[in-house]
Amino acid sequence: MTAPNRNALWARTFADELARTGIDAVCIAPGSRSTPLTEAFDRHDDIETFSHLDERSAAYFALGRARRTGEVTPIVCTSGTAAANFHPAVIEASQARVPMLVLTADRPPELRDSGANQTVDQEKLYGDAVRWYKDMPEPEATDRKLRSLRTTAGRAVSEATGVDAGPVHLNFPFRKPLEPTYVEGDVPADLDPEALDGRSGSRPYVRTTAGAPELSDDHLRKLADDLAVDRGLIVAGPADPPGFNAEAVAAFAHATGFPVVADPLSGLRFGGHTRTTTVLGGYDAYLDERVTADWPDPEVVVRIGASPTSKALRKYLARTDARQYLVDPTGRWREAEFAVTDLVEAEPSVLAWRLSQLIRNRPDESWNALWTDAEDAYWSLVDDETDAFEGRLAADVADLAPEPSTLFVSNSMPVRDLDRFARPSTKSRTVLGNRGASGIDGIVSSALGAGSAATDHLTLLTGDLAYYHDMNGLLALGRLGVDATIVLVNNDGGGIFHMLPIEEYEPPFTDQFKTPHGLDFAATENLYDLSFASVAPDDFRDAYAESVATDGTDVIEVRTDAESSHRVRERIAERARERLSD
Image (cartoon, rainbow, N blue to C red; front, side):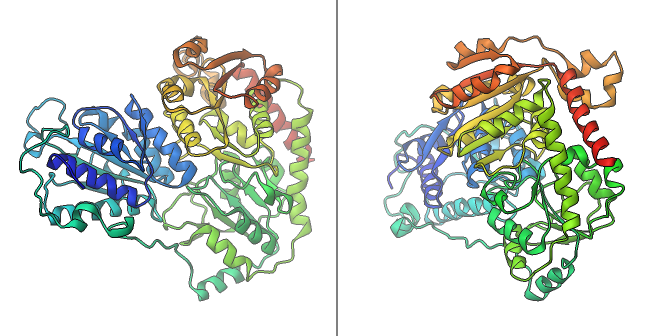
């Protein structure tokens, strides 16, 4: 490897080692202090660069790619507040266990705490949200330092993608010159070839052999014995990247005879396994005390993934007198009702497959019938509803999206509507969302990042506030060549607040919570070179079908009334409870 100065050598060596670990893409926000890193990634033949003008959008775009692939897309920025703009995405990645590698450029050490321009304290900037932090040494062209640099690159990727996946932060101080300007004597001619050019055969400098935590045979048999009961339930919450093995969970469900309660972000609500596995999706409406008071409690509940989206499901699990097993590969706690009785430190898919080889329960037909009858009753009520409402849009997207599809769903009401109204089906859907910290920031960028990592058709289902919050992310459409169908549910403000008791208090409800904005989003058509159409709810299915059949990005805005939609949701749920509690 040749380089005109030590900064260039340092950055090019680091980029080369990342490529050797399998990194094939990086998101870069422009800036001066990060010039060595930017130049190194830009010139590397095996690394694709995604250039973003907005650091927050860059970070969420990288997060979306990692959600889709389970692999790291590093993010690069200059010093100062640029690094602070990565922080929301870092928090989301940490909470949701999404791999992320944050590469921030910094001023030289002597300029810290000096009042120097664009200099802030970047040491451990993201606090406990990162799995590993390292303040990188200043660039130096010596064998030992270059070996250390290559080792750090490998360690960083390993830490970010390990069992407890999440963000890793490396902070790079650089002195001038930042550009690849020749500096006499900066790079010695007698450097060790392996430190300079890496291991032969494009091998990584250091390999990490990853493993998944498993139970010992004795503990596995004990757990299998505990699960040999008549009434059980498998609850699958939002999955961590790269998701559950649906076949393994289905095999476990068959062996136990337990139905699967599948969050829309679990990866288990849709797919071929639903042909032979009892997968439930309407539970949010019927898991009410009036319905379940006459049901027997499950004897055991096996929980995988993060906490479910459905509050009704969480409350049901809290009031059951069941032994509840929370399966988590990191051994960390993700259950805020504190109803879990047993924490099982194991990789869920591996555990499910191993248990399926040991358990041979007889399905309790009356227990399963309680759930399937409730499902049938609920979905018939949904089908009978004739009024247009926001939940119907979520159901239509899940039904009409082409196969295979990536569906990214915003927080607030869209993910809740998908949870309530997207019926389990055999269709091939990869459904993603940012449920780690559940914010509405970065939704557009996350979706486009996910779309950039796959050839599937991409649909983003979002509300108007989330669309407004990340309109900067739409710049990736033209700059980075990502196409999508964006379903914009516009109810002019925070419709989710109609679910809260504050709705009854006016003021301050409208001005301080719903906060109608009155924005006309049609202006984004010319600003971001996309197709924008505003359609009535009754015309949505035709508009969506037309969009997925054509190339380019279409925004389909559907103007809705938040209050009336919420009343329809309440009416369907109330009818389900009345029918099932008779």
